[in-house]
Image 1 (cartoon, rainbow, N blue to C red):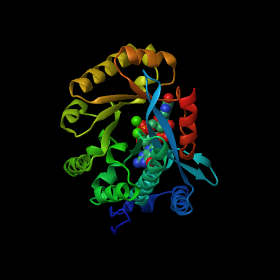
Image 2: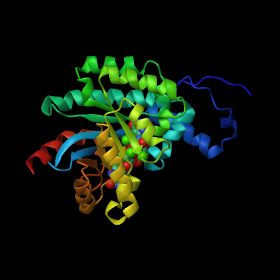
Image 3: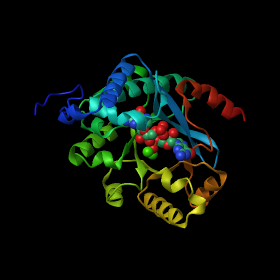
Image 4: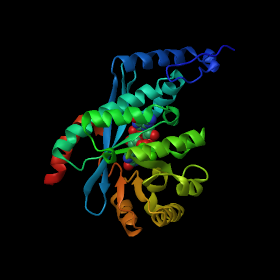
Length: 278
Ligand code: C2E
Ligand code: CA
Ligand code: CA
Ligand code: CA
């Protein structure tokens, strides 16, 4: 097999040669879609459940596909990874997010944005310099940027990944462990990682008030996180009863359709103004 390098400097997957015509077409469309700026950034508010105030907003990418309509990240991020363009996508998301942070903070000084990283991003040596340069350029405090990563992202090349996390921590950005509860050796990792909070996966939260198992797991995560001095964010709150249950369990931060579905990034400032009034 021939091996060659993609823009991410990952080794090209010879398995590509076995992709179907549909898949190859989709790949070509994605490459073109990125060039033609068909990707858009959405945000979802993250709330303080007690005060009803905004803590941060998570940035979520969407693709306005010319033929298929709006696609969710789960529909195309794997393809972006296979194409070797996932890191350039991350760079674009970071650039847009940090620029928006600067604009938003002019009016809302405490505003924070959370950006999702892929596992491949943690292997890019220059990521720290890249983020630092953007923060300086836009005069944004490092602590107002949160980087979310999944446990899975740490399992491929754990030594390299954790070295990267330590460098990011030194830079002063906040780190959050995403989809918590769905991976392996979770508790071991929690103690070792330079993170400030964990996000409990929505699969436990969606039906929390109806499932004793999910209440038990969520309760255990909240207790352990607290004992380790970590914050906890519940993801996927869809109903009032779940919010109430979480509050009785001591979890005070969350996001979900109950508060807001993701909406366009440019709608965030108006949303904040409206929320302040009501
Ligand atoms: P995630 O980081 O776990 O993001 C939360 C996902 O849950 C989002 O899906 C969001 O729309 C959805 N969600 C929020 N509230 C609720 C709720 O109340 N109920 C339910 N059922 N779902 C809710 P989305 O936007 O489709 O994103 C999927 C995943 O794609 C994200 O999961 C994240 O891992 C990844 N992703 C999104 N944007 C980016 C990005 O810019 N870069 C990278 N590397 N990954 C991204
Ligand atoms: Ca996330
Ligand atoms: Ca998540
Ligand atoms: Ca997820």
